[in-house]
Length: 308
Image (tube, rainbow, N blue to C red):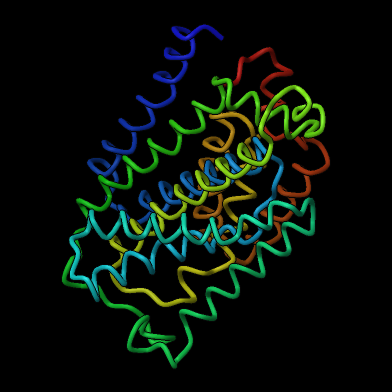
């Protein structure tokens, strides 16, 4: 796609998304719900980076999110860092965690997914260890009430979301993104054509870790009080993966639609008819797997609608 056309497509996605996120708190009082939308939108796009463009399904993606939250907390508690510096520390923590886990990229399919999940569980056990209470507060929770600022942390969450969507837009239209797609389809042919397969996979992996770490640190700032079970909850990984798959991976707008539809239904059904929530949600997921394995994006393409 020509650069000018790619730029127009990018602005068509980013500008309405940022404006909606910025203006909705003025007309809708539940800012926590809107913040959670931003969190899951960022995580779904982070999953999109590593799964949609490389084919690695990260069941333990929450490990990066939790590492970012605890990196933020440790910087505030022990280094007395300000929120923005602490966010940088949280993002760096997730990237370092990703570097440590790069050998997992030698695995594939369910082996990678299970090993990634095990790594996330391991780091959760480490930070919740009572022996580390003086460092991580162990299982007793972290309190950062001195920096509590939901208005500013919400605004920064918009920027983190925009950055993540921008990364996916870059992968969608850049040569590097095309190289990742080629690796996903046939790594041997990609390598024979001159693509550095290992380096490309590692870059995508670390970029995915970075986005999760940023929003994890942002989450820690927004709530200011949390426990290991909160930030390492498997729900973050499960929801992010389901939202991305429901909308359609390797697209920009797919995960956005997935979060809007499924997280919207999650809140509506869970509040109005909680007794039917599991049934309705389960049927939706089954219908996706059976009839739309490539997500909503594939349905829109059948109708002749161009999907970014």
